[in-house]
Image (cartoon, rainbow over all chains, first blue to last red; front, top):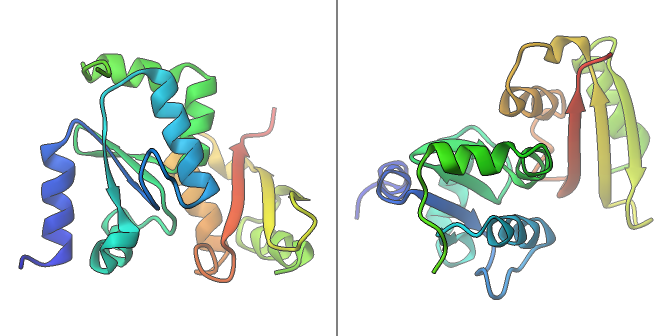
Length: 109
Length: 75
């Protein structure tokens, strides 16, 4: 199997919007992940998620990948956007909506 | 971690920062921090948060699980 850093790079490059989180969008296992999911659902964009609790290599590797100590982490078009606090700040300022529009992200089904 | 310890680390890492800590659940484990610092000026949000995490010297995501962080520059 490829090393964790290149696996993570593959994931963020191959998904327009991807959230690394604890649990799943239906069953988040942490309040911060739950908040991140709620924001994405509210924006109405299509996104994928990776449950780090199912993969210890990704769970520790993702912290090095963007030099960011916590989960959840949001990536849009391969770029690290932030954790749930930054998502909330950007959402409230209308910036997250703008970012999704600029990135031409597909709406949720 | 105690609220005073969190605030102390942030203040020593970011000299002159205004730090306000709220114990969200009253359990000494879930905090919110608001950090206002002139050094954030002109920096993107990710860089601002990283500066605070650096001041916490690796405790974020470890000893400190739940810290809701808001950063701003002084008016």
